[in-house]
Length: 300
Image 1 (cartoon, rainbow, N blue to C red):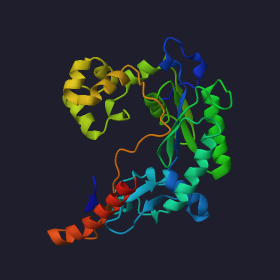
Image 2: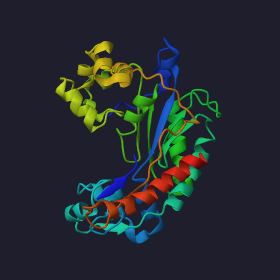
Image 3: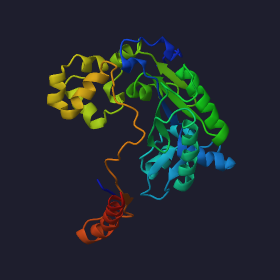
């Protein structure tokens, strides 16, 4: 029991972008490290290389925090109960997470980003948006910037990164998944709307399982279906997310890359070793989580 608070797009260059709006002239890169935690462990322990690895607890109530690509071939993925992962992949090797190491490597990677632009928006330890429209190197082609950054990451850390390049954050994020692992793809303004139209909404960044299910109930299964709905309809059914969905269905996303994005939430969680059926032991587990969250909020 867990407790918690709270395909391929042709590799063209962004110089093809039409200049009808400021939004379409932007050059945004989404960098996503490949199986980051597991790859760090395989880098640091040669015995793990080429083998299915899961970062997380191996005990019956453990959870997979990250899985290597060798493990993913068996259907193992993050957030999967360890007992299920072991059933899917009997040879799975569990490694305890080393978050201090992951943070140090992440810092190395962000220093490389900073050589190119101050407009860096980290999403987590292993991924970030970069706006390279006006970059520090004076480079015109975003695909070349992404190639350089990925090569420098490999040289500095020994790890592979994938990249997506586009004219906004939504499409850059979607593009980074197209040629994983250790690849990159670009979605140009000319191709953006068509790419979105054929994409299932369940694959949209920002559309979680619950929203995807709701969209499906409303007859919205693809980007084209979403595009066919009016702004008023989307606001009625999805509230403040309505305008965002209306825009991305058309390949439009005006959100800026924010280097100093304000954190809107903080959480803490743990997993009970056994099932809990009464208040007292539940409270004993929850109380330290409350204290951890309160301490963070008080300090920030």
